[in-house]
Amino acid sequence: MSHSSLFTAVSLGLFAGVTASAALAETSPLEQQLKDLDSFQVIAHRGASGHAPESSMAALELAHEWGADYLELDIQMTSDGELVAFHDDTLERTSNGEGHINDYTLAELKDLDTGSWFNDAYPDQVDDAFVGAEILTLEEIFNRFGQDARYYLETKSPQLNPGVEAALVKRLEAFDMIDTGRVLIQSFAQESLLTIHELNDKIPLIQLVWYYPSEEDDERLVEWTGVTPGPQEITDEDFQAVAEYAVGMGTNFIYEGEEVIDAAFIQKAQENGLPVHIYTINETDEMQRLLDWGVSGLFTDYPDRLIKLTE
Image (cartoon, rainbow, N blue to C red; front, top):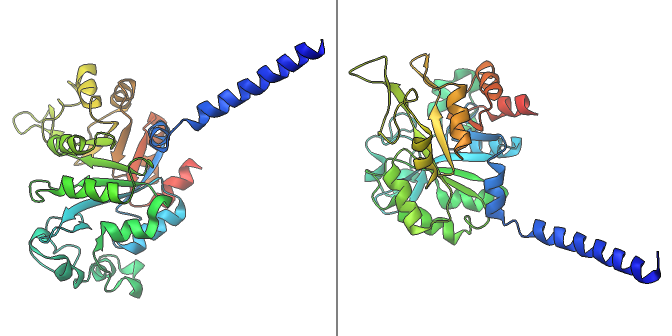
C-alpha cells in the first residue's frame, strides 16, 4: 500500500471513529431515559416502603442506596400551593392528623408525625428514628437526591388538587429534571396527563390502569376510568391510542386474588410501543413469574428483593 493510500485509509478510519463517537454523543439524556425503558426497571414504591414509613426520607434513602431505577411518589398540593409526597387523600392512615391533606398549609402538615404509625403497624421493624418523620416537599426530595436519582411521580387525585399539573411542571423545569431524563409522570387520569403534555410535551408520561370485574358481569373485566377496554377486549389500536401520548403503562396484575392480565397482554402492549410496569409486587415468587413473562418493570415496596432477583 502506498503512503498516500495508507494515509487515506487511516484518515477514513479515524473519520469513521469520530463519526461514530459523534453519533453516540448525540443521544440526549432524555433520549437515553426512553431507551432505558426498554430494559427492566426497578420502581421503589413510595421508596423502600416495606422497610421504612412510605414516602419518608428514610424509605427514599434506602431505595436510592440499593440502586432502584426510580423513586416512586404520589404528589399532592397543600392549601397554600406547595407540592408534597403523600399517598392518601386523607391523613389518618399514615400520620397523627385527620381530614383531607389538601385542606392544610405546608406549615400545618410539617407539624404532623408521619413515621410513628409504621412502628405501630410493623412491630418487628420498630425504629425510634422513624418517630416524628415529616411530610416531605418535592423540593426537599429534589434537593436531597438531585440528578443522582430518577423520579416516577403521580399526579394524585387531580380533582382534589386543582393546578397540580402546572405547579409540578414548574418545579420540574426549575430543577432541570426534564431534559436531563430524570422524571416520569404517571396518572390514572388521562386528562391530567394530557394537561402535563400541554404544559411541556417533552415530559414522558405513564398511563396507569386498573382492571377489575364489571359490576354487571363479573366474567368481564373493565378499566377503572375507561381509558382502555378490559384485557380480554383490548386491541392493538387501543394500545396505540395510549402510545400517542404515553411512553408506557402501569397496571395491576391481580384483583382480589384473581389475575387480570397475562403474558399476552404484556407482549401486545410492548409490540405497540408501551413498556408495562406492574404494581405493586412484593413476593419474590410473583416477581419471578412476572420477570419470566417479560414485564418491563415492577413497582415494589421491597426493591432489595427485586434487585437481588435481577442481578
